[in-house]
Image 1 (cartoon, rainbow, N blue to C red):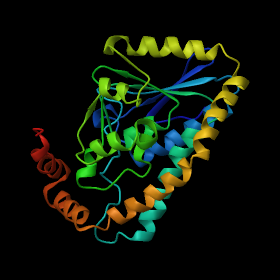
Image 2 (spheres, helix red, strand yellow):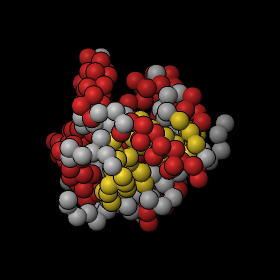
Image 3 (cartoon, rainbow, N blue to C red):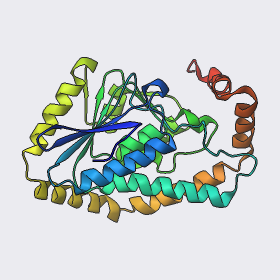
Length: 273
């Protein structure tokens, strides 16, 4: 098994494995290194004949605050449509790979699950959340759309999707449950035990049947056009990155620092109308 620095991949018990995003000091922001290590874990899990179900969680206070904007190329000087589109297509490939892994994946979500974090859990098969979980895409106020839209239009319909994308507001765990973004909500101190209990029930079913159950449901969704829709959304995000709004915000983030730019961006949204 490979050695990792930003994630932990371990066997919990027979047939059940767990991936922990392990950058708690950064609220498990999705850095390029972490994402590459997630890719490697997906390879290991899929080829492990002894693994039937994978639980995915975050260390520390949150599942994930989203993509790590520090140390990555962002709209600005030297940023081109070509390299932007190439990078976003790689992002689409990663999440679609997670979606199509042949065995079940269960996201165990607590705290923040924002932006890229919502893409991550959107492509898992099952999502259990704690009562303190919060979902949203606040970056949509200044940085563009999510390349995959986190499967929100499919999972909760176009009207609710627009309601949250138009404002970047956070969604509570209970509302996420009402709108089918998550399967179940538990008190924070019971989330891990309840997730593991469900994983044990999944693991009782032979893996060869689990793979077929998953394939049948995914095939149905793919016939509806989910893969093409996500690729189209990535292209629209490329367009978003060329807008004056995004370019101005990136300039502000360079001048004021990321934290300062985020504070200024989100201040008007602190109180809902």
